[in-house]
Image (cartoon, rainbow, N blue to C red; front, side, top):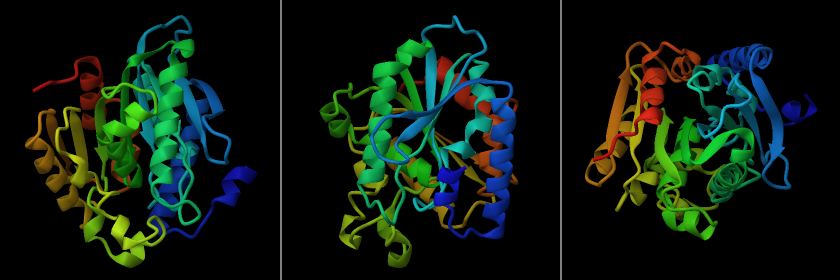
Length: 282
């Protein structure tokens, strides 16, 4: 708990309610789902992951779904996301919740690099837990959607890290941020050293040549600035080779859409599971 307390910063009442609900549901999940917690992928605080496993301890070569938490890059916890695991471990698949170092202490590009190092750990080690390193998928909510998209699109960085350029078989951003060049400098300040870094930190500027399939989700009553971001990012990717789909989620706001990630019968979970079993190609 000391680790969690160290990262607490003030949040809005809806965000506080979301946080409490996510923590509670994750604790409930731990009681019923096989898991390995706080697996380090680096030497620093917050460079670790939680791994949730299928009930069948003998399952092998199952797909792997890495998911990155949100929180405006300045707060958030991998412990927010364990509640999502049962919707995917029943596929069967392995669900991995990723922590990364937070702004303002850690500036871009280091949160992206942390997530890439987490992916590298999964690629090199997940077979020991029954996962298939050739069937890794990534997603994220809000700021985590931004980081997931950066992972999928920075192919040279994947290769330089010793992974195949196609290590990620699809990307599933939820309520993500994709163009930092259009955001208020005050809001970018915690993440970026300078506004001049915004283009390099914007997934929408990195789409040329993309072949990775993308499935976007955005809430009908999400934060107003995020709705056009998802549509613009999907449109930009449709001019490339990878398959693209965007799900508009009726009656869902920025926090409900995340909590629905644990609903095994929900439309987003159903679609993600379908893509993990039979990833579309153009």
